[in-house]
Image (cartoon, rainbow, N blue to C red; front, side):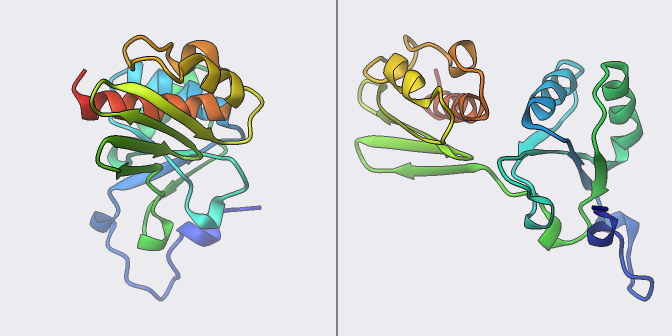
Length: 183
């Protein structure tokens, strides 16, 4: 299915190129998104992993939002690493904006951060992880078992003990909790 119909302005519409300042990279699998994110961040690119806009969503997928002015250089960097996106599209409409994957809830004593489909909840007093939930990947119970009951800085990083999209999403939530707690 071609995504161009969603991203190309209609011939009779007024479209100012200056209004388009970000684009999205679409990949076949989440593992490719994770690899691309790692390569791009290692090369200093200002990118964000986001949820795809509804028009391109096919399940548990992610996209990479990037500065559109850098499209050719970013594609060259990915090509040199053997990572090729299926599609690259400018974000030319509010309906085509990627979806923020974070939700933060402050419950007084507890703070919950959700990234995509995974949630981590901590006790703000001593930074103990009190709950890990969400997702449907086979390693979620293992991640919860290994992390719950431990202080944030003592718990293993999800990326070190998990290998699925859920572990990746939990890693993002874990990092957001760290940022918010200034560890």
